[in-house]
Image 1: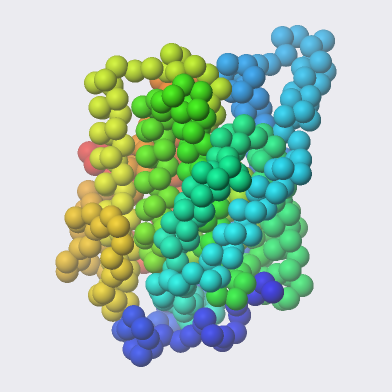
Image 2: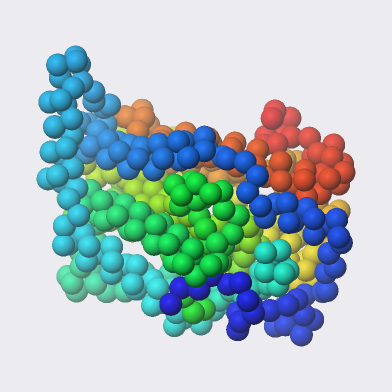
Length: 472
């Protein structure tokens, strides 16, 4: 049964020094409570309001189909009707591609549902690191406990997939071959879970921060902390679905190349490494996720649900789709180019991993938590000693307000560069991502200004640059 916590339960408790990870007592001033109360109310529409979110809910699936069709069937070229008379035949051709090669068939339902059920099962039964989240104003400043077992689940999933592939029970090459069919099922899941969570939350009276517009509230979400038993659905869906699929799509492409050519190209190996680094980082640092704004403030609606179930896994790896449907000669580089590409990826990953770790552990330190989880790989510089100020101005964060965003975007750009100029569709990830990051940055800074007041002004005077030091 899905729960949206609004009262004390086994996973919900007041802050206490007797917890497994002792947190020092935090006091909240009357002024602070007023600010939190303001932030927990709907104040204005984002994303263009009801009309804007409706356009996105319709437009995103159509765009995903269109870009996949261009990659798979038209050599990565953007196709379009050449005349008014050609519009209807063009739409009929597009529909034929979806109908014939992206139908939500029984195989796709079996594969995608199997993944979802297996990931839920693993999240339920696997042991994990118990992490206390931040105080949630809407819960009376109580905190939720999170069972962070994504790392065990990841390796269990990898071993299971390897065994199924080896014994020919489920060949990994079939994933990329059925990309369109599985993508359609993923979209259906995204819509079904989004609307289902909205209706369940409203029916149980656990909605929060509602606007009064049905479609807008479905998009932004109605529930804050949905759970099935000990499994926090919002955190589970953030890691276990999108990045697992992204990784296995890359692995599937590599397996297909090996079976077809007898080797895996450096470009495909790059994507396998890049997607594994990202997935493993999310799993190994899962205890940092409860410290994020996403977990204790953002609601679980279509904006997050659809993107986790369908958007991320089926738009971020267009380079893999292109490589799986084209000969390696189309995207082959020189050895020095590969050296630069891999070096850029690993450098950006190091900055991203350590900056995220610095921020999350800084938040834990402000709670009095000084013992941190040790998972592979722990990179030097991930934990700051005696960090300065109420707001973080140490480590990477002394140079930029969002060093993690810069590194994250650099990795996304590399995911497109890996196929060079063969087609620009794989650059969709980086173009979309930078748009999201800039929008999110504006939201973050506005909320920080409200929450921290003059402290935020002083912080901005010290850390002047939003993204790139000396530039912007």
